[in-house]
Length: 592
Image (cartoon, rainbow, N blue to C red; front, side, top):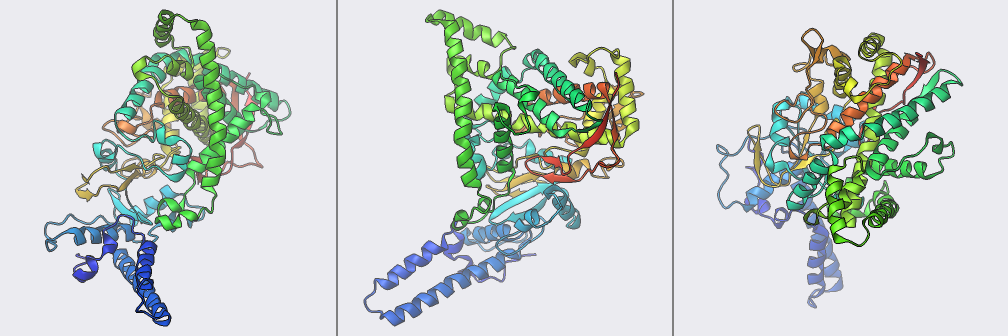
């Protein structure tokens, strides 16, 4: 259907369509200033003319908004279509125009904004999955978030066309991301030479297999400290609130990996005092700010003054604390390094080379040891290192908590996992990374946990088209935001058998002696929790190694059962990651 063939050319060619961000208030003020500058117009007539112009501008904008709203996908898509028509000198040829992408219209001007904020108790990934099913648009659905055009895919083949497409190498930089220093981090940096250099540094010096293997000592130390703290708490009773222990262990793990610092569990006292508590507060605050839905990111600039969630104020309060904290750690590492180097430039070169070969150092050491052509400024280092802490802390804790909750509800799976642990490792022996790799059922449990409870169901951050491109036979204009609803893919009955059931056996093959690893970012995107393509998460291997080891050691030490007064609830709350709305409380019975 040609939705705009009935619109007069004079309306379509109006200057309202020729600006990507039309400032109609400025336009009206200019018109009023012209009127006021005319001495021939009396005061009364000028007032009447001003009112008339005001009604004309507002009426035209309302008319345009309603016409645009009639387009599939809503206001932003209709406005784009009107602009394209107004810029074209040729009459529209509907026989050659690209097919329209189905999707909800939402509300005039606001599109589907309220679907993300007004569905109480429903997370965005579930809302989008239901809309895609209702509009028969699982491969690709269009919708509007204010003036932002968005497409979302719930199909693995189409998802690959988005994630592995050179046209979608950019991420939308939201207000909170920009103010939280992430504009220069690996995740949000614009694609180009600098971003490619950062990715290369990550792959070669931070997340290479040798360094991950060398840091097993850290993972073991943090896990042992967590288990000891749990055991001490259990002396007062068998009920355990799991989340604080997982969060502190995850914080310790990432802090020692990145900064070479660690905190004792005793540092996390009830009053929330101490350095560990302060760091965790900064991480949680940044987590909430980056995950907060900010209306001003999707509405015209006139709405920038609206900051109901105080996002800008909270970001501006947090950033100086983060910058000072991380920069102090960098300065401390630099002083320690210079003390070892002395004044000899030859010694400097030798130490830089040896630092690349030594994978036991933390990430700060690795960045300071970069050769001259790869050297980073302190500001860049702060952004990159803070991103590592920020993205690595809660994700591992959230995933482990979800899997433990499923093990409580599925005692048969827990028993089978414990039997595998006993078979591979003697009861009194500690599990190592090499042991975990020999446990196919453990790997299947982790993969099923990721399938059922993706930390980032919408793959955390969307992509932006840097130029016009084609996806699933549809033209996607430059500047369009693209999402992949990985939750919808991992819960699709046409892809997975009985997708709502926690069943690790679906990942086993050859008589349950081998695990069919599906977590990746290549051709098969039926399960891609870490994304795919050039923007895939570089810390995937580290996260998988950590969660697998911790899960195995927890099950080795404790039998976990449901507490009658604290039933397990699998309801979700979507912040930056998808967390358990009701934290896990269960009975932990020591096995030894």
